[in-house]
Image (cartoon, rainbow, N blue to C red; front, top):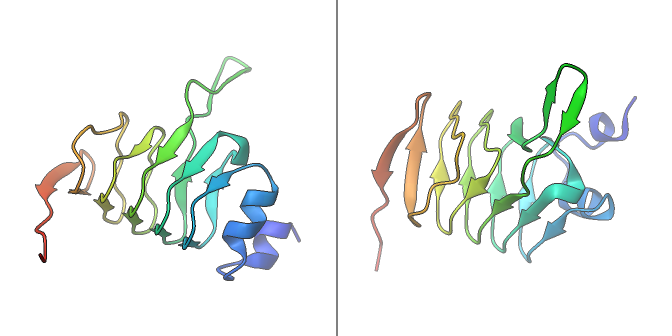
Amino acid sequence: LQASEMLADASIVPAFIRMCGATFGHGCAMGLQVTLPETLVVGKGCFFATGNILTSVDVDQGKFNVPCITYMSDHTFLGNHNHLPEGLPEGSFCGVGTWLPKRPTEPNMSYFGNPAMKFRRLSNQ
């Protein structure tokens, strides 16, 4: 068994990925992710459900390329099975099965589907 399969959705997943080279802010929780840890930067207070692809890895004609770092800003929330090669801005929410090929610029938005539909998140203040 691979270490990632043994961890499943354990609360120590962020610590394990951090030990592999990722950068994490305080108060993050996540299930298993597909990532290259040394190219992942996660802000504080984030939650990622299982099965997200958090890497920009591209393999073409036998060439392995990592065009950018995946940067997940503070307070981002991911549902299951999203593909976010460049990450999300602060306060973003991403539903299930969403694909965002480019990092959005507006904070506090929600994204759903493929192609992604964008919705403004309402503040509770």
